Image (tube, rainbow, N blue to C red; front, side):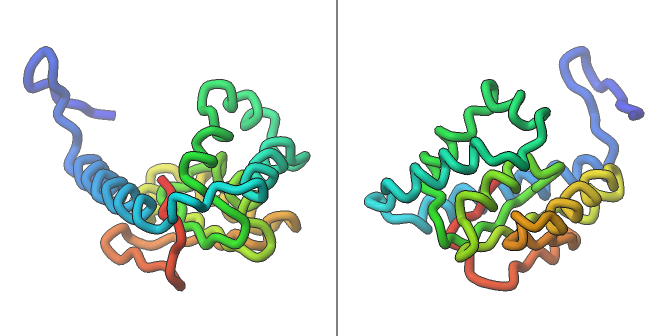
Length: 165
């Protein structure tokens, strides 16, 4: 990448990356607001905990994902976000699918995961779009739909229970 230093402590990003960074920042704020409003406080349940535990031990999880669990603490994060069976989740920035598989298992057959990667991002990292498409073809993840479109045109096909980032 061609970064231009404007001072010793600041790097100037190329214009495309600034736009992409701004789009992700805006999506992150939206995700936080929507996810905070979507769930009621009493929604943590035994069913949720069982679904999260099952997702963590699912045999289809790649070894590389399992190795990242210690640092990422997905079990605690999924519980904090109150992801439950039957939820419809919009995953902003699905990237290679680390959380996509986990979310898919937690929401189960009665739920849905929309794994969104902005087309602007996939122009830089097309392999990540291919990774999400591969997940949608796995039988245990029939509830995952890959979405790719410009960040400025983002629209989910149905109302979300949780916006995930």
